[in-house]
Amino acid sequence: MSDPHLSRVLQRILDFDFVPGTLNVRLPEPFDAGLESYVGWEELGRRTPDPEVPGRRGLRYGKVIIARRFPGIVFQGDEPDYPADLVELISDRHLRQTLGLSDGDVIEFTLVGSPESADGG
Image (tube, rainbow, N blue to C red; front, side):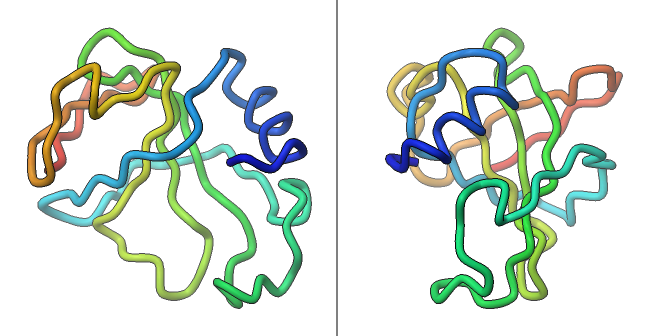
């Protein structure tokens, strides 16, 4: 996230300033909510194939409200081995510090426009 091109693309997607880094969230079951937005790996300024994740083609994402008050996005990598029960969150604040999170804690997020929320730990 320190890459300037990647930061500009994420800024456009998020429509707000964000804190670099993601919060990895392991869910109790596979995440099957429809993440209808998509950004290709090349658009993010990344090489294809990526030497670190050779099968990654892009990211599926959706806007969320985290802990019922903070805007953010949830995303999953579009790659063959990306775990179905893993999502990553980006927000306008450092979520671990702001919410006092430790590894294994539960965090709630709701897809914007969805009546249901997801809890992950």
